[in-house]
Length: 223
Length: 401
Image (cartoon, rainbow over all chains, first blue to last red; front, top):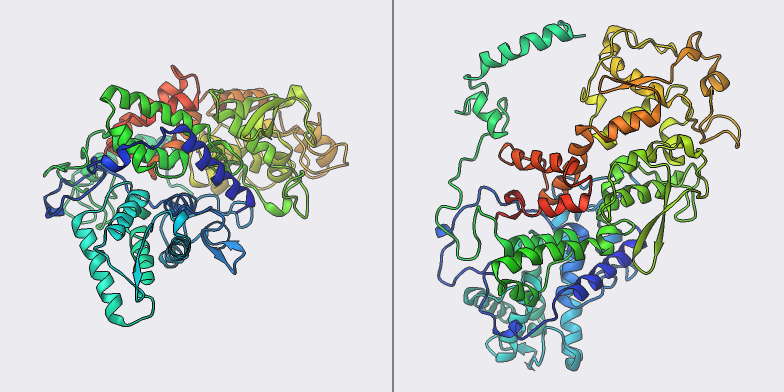
């Protein structure tokens, strides 16, 4: 893949945002809006089964755009191998469903995801989430997702208003819907496990892994 | 070698199929005919229809199995703009009336088709050209990404392909254009007609779109006398017919003649070459990279006689007239016209976008919508990919979760 691709992705995003209506107060007043939310307490077994819907892997370019937009990070710094080369565009494009027409004559993406695809997805998501959490905690004034977080003894209270707001923002930016109560409960239990492990900086780890969990969910990777 | 002649085979085939319709050849509990009608494989027990009641049970967030505008617009933005819409944008969309949502879906498609992700170098339209252009980085000429052995600048081919697919241009021009296309960034990519660009040497009266570019002649014709590969690649790339897979076979009586003494009159060879050789004759005077710098990549009258006369006794008898789809044509420009006006071209072009947006060829259940799309692409939509896409995204196949 060529350097043009990163330019192309940057311009794609610019044009899209310019074209769409400006964010409005509906951002905070929505009630879920039918955005694919499982009603709390409901069971997926009650849901209608689609014989028509097609679910597809987003592939490297769309994942780069969606992860970058969700995390508020430039596409070319989202994840870099050796600090130099874009993970999703230059180093792991084929594992992420990309093509290599000029070099190896791969004109179309492979029809399946390979054994290394999840590893590459994890690599990109973790790199991006780590950057976002680090930047938001170190420069709270310009925080994008994790705003106003209070870290006490290395820990973050998942029930605090700031944490709840951050998770709400994370879900809306990554999955275009608010989190459900059960999803928030799962992330709270993740925090408890991390704290119990005794590892240093459990609060930072929880924020990073919460972000990682959302970005690597089926709902995030497929459409 | 087939045990039956073409005529005997075609005559016996309906009866043979009827005889096995009611059988269950793979023992999966579904009759062969039912499997064919559902698009599954009657010879593979693991492939059988999923007769799931569609949408039974309801869904609070999606209109399952029916066209769902919120689902469709989100998918559309991901497909054509390259990234998901924002939560705020989706909320705004959801608040619109159904009629306004319909209109907004069309607006979003047009906005997305104006992005670099769609129309730029290495964008989605460009990527649909890969199988047609078949680039090779080490052989690339031209000023960008120059290769080690510079045979031709295939970015010119991509530019014409993209031009033909964008801005309501006639998609057939990819095969019939007598012009080239330049690409510029202002800052978004624009494509413009040009009748003179560097390294393109075929004279105007003999140009035929991407069939006669420097790259096509250098890479597909190269040193060969009778450019069978060039013809087969055009047939495969632009018409979706792969002769190597026995697709698009229109054997011409008394062919192949084997003018170049390659032994293609052997029975095993004729089943393809009775179609392929007459398909190739109109390419005879388009030179690849044989001869001097003043002769390469050009239309050379009497090219066979000039360069290849000593290769076979009858080689100079290769005619310029040939056949495509069983129809006689007097040269490559006529070949291209017949190809571009064919159903195969419309099916292949619409099929490219169908696979891009659906991830797979049409299923038997989707076939009626697909047929309607390519038929209107030829007629009411005037070979405009943009107009066709506006219809495609409104199909149930695209918008039903």
